Image (tube, rainbow, N blue to C red):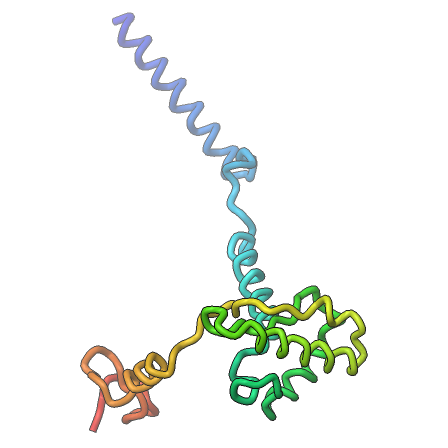
Length: 177
């Protein structure tokens, strides 16, 4: 009988101590390592990094922004250069000239770098020579064959797998004519 009373007393003590712990947690008295992070605290760091990388990519001059295999700017690149010049003093990013594929034309890359640095200097950025660099682009591009394959894979393909681009119902669903 004595053992049964001891066992019941021990169970009652454990139950009460468990309830006390649960009650303190429900009142916000949990240990700091057990508290959840504020909403967005974990994912915000990731999204801010993505945003910073995207902003830095705005300062890359790609191969297609030059006329052929020359250092002459293509018509669309002059607008890009103006946008870069407006923002350059407000950001810490370098201006990147995309390196030729497999570093095949280093002299051309340096000539392109020089052209961009000179244009930026004329636009009021005397430190542009130190901020313009030749480097690989952040994102690896497609070859023409890969681009064409990706484009054509979205057209008129197999609609039974949930696709349905541009058919009925404003392009949604897998319905087709």
